Image (cartoon, rainbow, N blue to C red; front, side):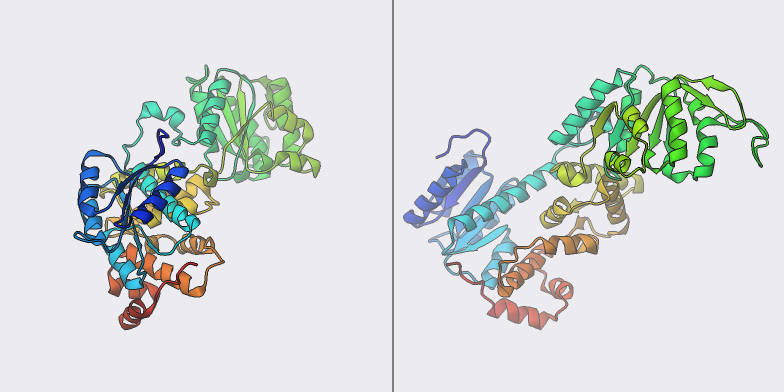
Length: 451
């Protein structure tokens, strides 16, 4: 038996001594803490006194069957997952096991790799569910308002803490939607300038011929329509911080003028011949490779060196692991409260799709998806069919292409039935077949035996 602290606990239930020995040996070799029982009654006694993460049970056993044990676990141990193994693998048996609550259904004979893969998938689903059910983190445990416990986000927080107390120029790099402005605000509001203005400027949203006036201000009569003297964003941010979002979108001529501000700490209003000194900390962001742009002559190298004193790289959402689930929980509660609706639950398969999706729009895309689900969903459970089609297609593309068509069909029908709790009418609608065809498939199909 493995004695590795922190590893998942697995209870193996089978009336065949050889099967118990092989399963225990294989799982213990992977660091799992294993317990064995030769019948359901013995397993129930172990469950009553020992926290178990996963029960692996045989289908046919004398006395209480594996299906009855699954039902008992589901009714009494909400934080325990179940797998079924059997020497008689059929689609009908799989459906029945899934209806009772089994997450995986493994037909004998199976390889060590198939066993360990099924165990890992099942425990991963338990992990997903536990994360989304855990209490939301309080303000004290989410410094700077950045939700996430991944190592990548820990490094971002560390960088914020180190740069906030300085006046150095910071370049915040990351894909669109990763939260660059949130990081910039965290730096400002944890700096000595926190009581002074924080002025964000979206450089890509302001036409180039207006950007100079918006940044530096203009005097009355400087150009047609300039009916009064108006201060620019740099003057507004005096004493505080200006955040130049997507600085890569500025023209080369504007970059020259920004370089002068960085060097001299002075701005010249459009139409004026006099410069004005400003005390402004500059934070900039980009979703592009500025180094590559400088090599192509599309961004001034001298400006790049000026703004690249310190760089904070924000990781894309797809590289943040379980942070996706924490953010899902946060946005679900946020929008449910705003709309006066109960917080929705996500099925295990839906959570898996969210976690595996590549999220090109990052946190902003996730926020928009959750908001749409809260608004449009009538029930209280989000299942895979409720998710945007692009996500569902993405999940399908990640399948193992070494499987036969029969195996793919078997697994897909089983997953659909799982998501609709065994409702054959609903499953037939999703599959695009009639109920009789589905029933025939359940009666006739058998999952190909592993060799």
